[in-house]
Image (cartoon, rainbow, N blue to C red; front, side, top):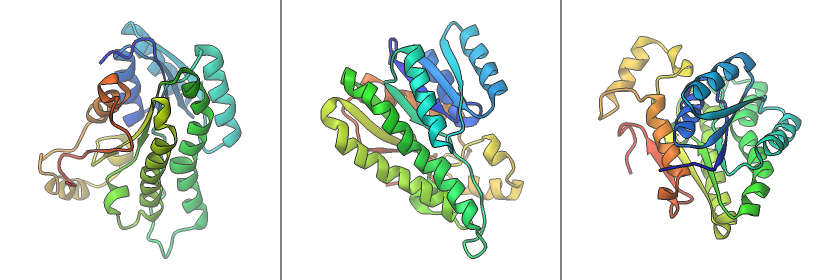
Length: 247
């Protein structure tokens, strides 16, 4: 599953799923451009990857800022020559029942989770078209498939990523570019750490495999979709949820 010679760009890479994906893609041979708001954490990640003998570079980025996306993607291509694997992972939550949800919280979640993916694809696609090879992987969520009370904004953004995935897959398939989504279930990350023990225990009861997922579980799926082993898969949503949702 070698990714040697490829350049990957991962958003939201400073922690959680994004961090796990960056480490795995680098391990498989890709040169990884890691992007997030936290420069210090990015530097630590690059140090960890390079210490293992792999290649990475840090690019501070707030994906909620369109101009930053444009300038950062140009900087990555300028420094590393191309982008041929794009992992749209950056995401936030602003949970609240819909009757109390502030418009600002709706807009922030849609901007960060969905609009940023569209903007990153738009900026990276010319590099992929030029070399007639590309992998776009959008990190959605099981809650974009089944919904979740108190997360109307988050569920809508993650469902939107699935629709975006399928549309892009149809647009660029003829150029040997695939676009797929990974839909994690309940994964142990900083985002889920804040949830109460009772919530976690109830969540595990809904998972046939009887455990929460790890960032490595998601990273393995992303690495597979980025590889030539997945060359004939596009427009697909790969559910990595321990059986929480089947079918």
